[in-house]
Amino acid sequence: MKKGLRAICILAIVLMLAGAVWAAPFFVSYSTKTASGLVTTGSGYYYGMKVNTDGTNSVTTVVYDNTAASGTAIDPSTVFTTSATLRAAASGSNPPRRYYKGLYVAITCAGTAGVTVEYVPD
Image (cartoon, rainbow, N blue to C red; front, side, top):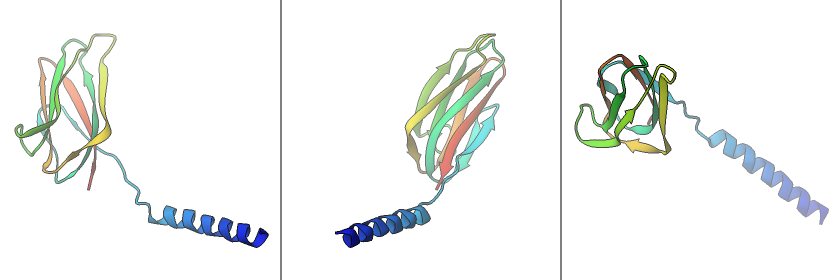
């Protein structure tokens, strides 16, 4: 009985170590835009965005699965309302959304805004 239990424990340890070796790490990439523009090309996973503003004007964003402001909106029109005391906001996607062609962020703001898009490319 003890030999069987010992063998099972050793097998479990070996399998855990093998899983750790085969697991591929991923790193979240990000790109900050102050005007509408291309974030990245190719495919991957969209995780969300952070928005910083001048504290006066609201910001409207749309994130497209494309290299231009057209096609499939993977993060539809989102309005971030800000104030002098709340100058930053964020939105996330859990689970992350898959994109295939690239990420393009369209930004509309009467003032100054910075939009940081977070993604993991394939």
